[in-house]
Length: 111
Image 1 (cartoon, one colour):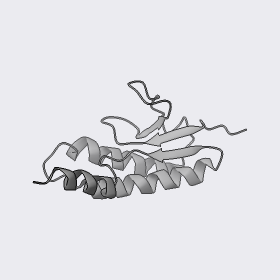
Image 2 (cartoon, rainbow, N blue to C red):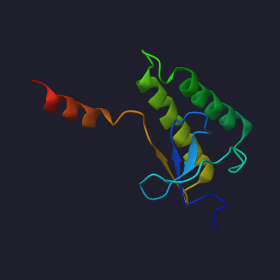
Image 3 (tube, helix red, strand yellow):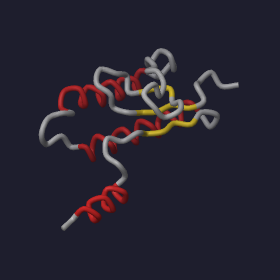
């Protein structure tokens, strides 16, 4: 049996670790986990901390590069998945919807 929760979510959240337990959709989707809760290696914990810091400092500023931020987040989610193994599912919740979905939304509302 795995020592990790069955479902984890990686998402940028102000003043968070960036790692959450994942439950049903809604207001209380899960709880934030610390890097110690998951026994993250120092290097991975440091990368998560830098990623969240980028979000905290620049996330609401004009010109924030959401696509780069999401790419970094997806990479962290993949690395976390390798750490926790196949008995745990790691989901990345991006800031923007997937480009294909975004394209369909924009195309639908263009005059």
